[in-house]
Length: 455
Ligand SMILES: [Cu+2]
Image (tube, rainbow, N blue to C red):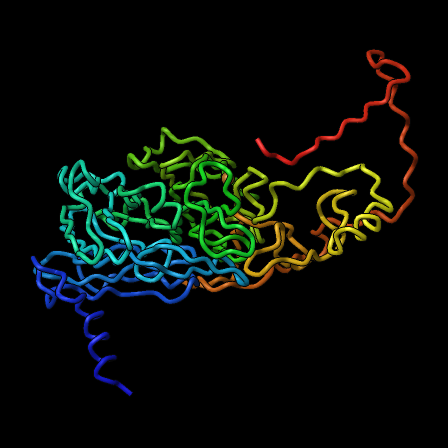
């Protein structure tokens, strides 16, 4: 039932309580909002110049309104609840219902008008990272504009001059606002839709968060010791796979808004880096890679022909970036005999459990976790636990994936005889390696590092 009070509150929310003084509430384009973290289907352009849309991993693209030839978008900066992976949610700041915000797709030469409504408790501004635009549209609080006060809407307007890969993020209380999840992707498609044509074009942003196990809100003053390394504010196993058809030319574009670099590694294929923040790279200037480092504040586009069927990991190669929370203060216990220790400690600390004598894989033991956190290494695969978290996902290459179909085909079915197998014959004793002459006889090294990788 709509009471008078509810009706008034609702009306106030819809028109922003008359805060839009210069443009007028009636002329504001609708601020479309997204309520879930699944990868949405590509947004085919309903009007304007034609282009081949991108797919935002665990994200979506923002619809626009065409107004006298100008593409009008409406971004709302606001508190959001983002599911980091099934089993964990975070209280973040984002745009239009999610963190990161929606991807904005325009075409080279488009005139673009972006309404930015600030529903945060502090001032805000958006910087359009990498764009050619009038200085006053660059979005730097204090330098090129006053901050957008809470409750107000500002308008940015410029021509998308250069085709390529961009992002947007706050230039207002930057450390706090990015630590809370405010960021988004931007693609300016080329005027000629056949320029550097690919069959699949995936985009995402890299992020980092410091959320104590059991809590919901990031610590905003963390400088380096983050415990969640995210692809579009998701961690494995919450990151969707990139599903492609065998033979497709695949492009993956990413932007790095974390506080460190990430060497991303693709299994089973070589790729070329075809684009940076500064634009596209000429074919004769490219070289093949299987790992590409992406620095802080950079964008990269890489391309490959997906010719090997299977489930191929694509992940950051820093091994602590493919782990989830709780990894930081666990001591290295490999080789340490813990027999009897747990029982004795149990008398003092009832929940204590000895860990890691044979490595970190825990031999199928389940640690009791606090509410709202994730296991360090997880993700059930067809052969057991994948033992990964953080910045890890897969490219699934299938012969029968239909063009334009982005749905998950399930696990790869390996042809008979193509999976690593157990040797069941005799295992001869290995010959003893000769003693190194430099070692001092009779001295046994017994070194134990007291801590994990705390710097
Ligand atoms: Cu990394």
